[in-house]
Length: 149
Image (tube, rainbow, N blue to C red; front, side):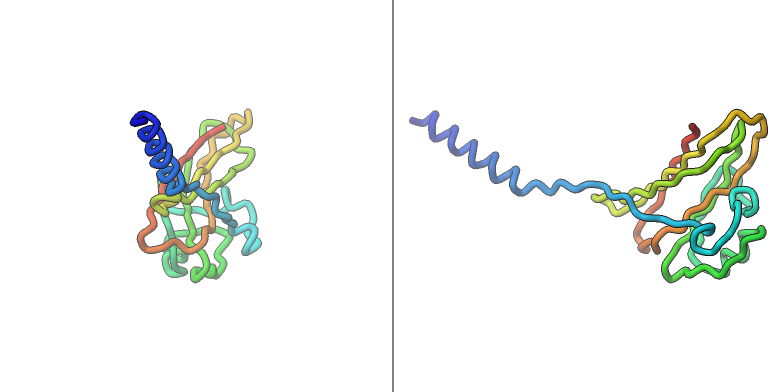
């Protein structure tokens, strides 16, 4: 009888603990680019920022005008967007750059995954990469993860 009561209480405990599970799932956040929003062309080659193997978050037009040079100088809607911009030197030619922005469900922090898709060209370019992201919160942190394929 005591064993049966113990098993029933254990089953109830497990059932209630599982029903209160606060499981969350990281989410992918939609991003855009200067090419898409402002008709800029070939920004990986035509845009520059004084960085070396680093990333910067630009959240206002004044900083954009001060730090970013090149043929693309739009007036960005910084009430909607933050600009994440960086530079990377590669050992071979570049086919394309892909971006994925992930929000951590527990912390709210962001991780931008930048993937350089390479080709066999012997040119070793230094490219400027960027993403226009939804405006970040004051407490949100951003990490950038670079991969080369």
